[in-house]
Image (cartoon, rainbow, N blue to C red; front, side, top):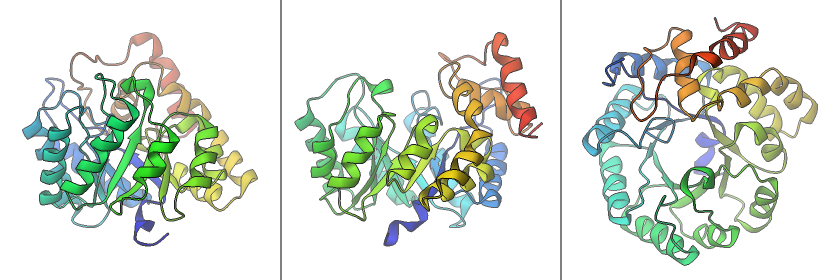
Length: 296
């Protein structure tokens, strides 16, 4: 894998820590960035879905990216979430992220307006042609109501600064097709913690993970074992995390993961409406997972 080697393995879809009034806690953000550097996380995704991109304003979105890039100071790559359902807005965000010094951008398929497959192709093609920064596609039909076909991904993979895809379909037939049809240096990243080991064993290069927020060291070991094709070790290590992969989606992401990090003492309980803090009925389940891993 040429210049994209820094994105191989476990990358974190980082939360945006907030105070209970919903304002961003930049000190906690600094501590989280240090936590991931110390834990060997491959790269940090700033203001993706898990970072509450849907409820931060544009200026604030860019401020969080700017702060993360400056604080990380090249100690770990920062991938900026810059996707939008408006192509012009995605171009604007991607340009700004490039100006702020982000190492790459993650661009989700346009949500809500349900473009055609050709519309998806033209959307991503125009962003790539408009901004000369490495770009990673992000297909997550469970969130966006649109599923980008393998054929469109393969066509986009021919564009030089589209360097990979985060596939969060959880459909292992997709990764098998992508491995077969995409250029060898095109990054194939999973966005589905529950199926990540199988994805990596099938030829994937890494993942952008929610679980990595909680157990980054442990998850990196799982990913590297799976990438190396060590099935038994990967499954054995991952067995400790299986419950966490599942329970971090008891309510919409990032509700459970933010509450878990709060319990670990890494951030306040803040989250923005229309999302609420984790329902009390699920507290004991998350606490049990954290205790089993020795995280609290």
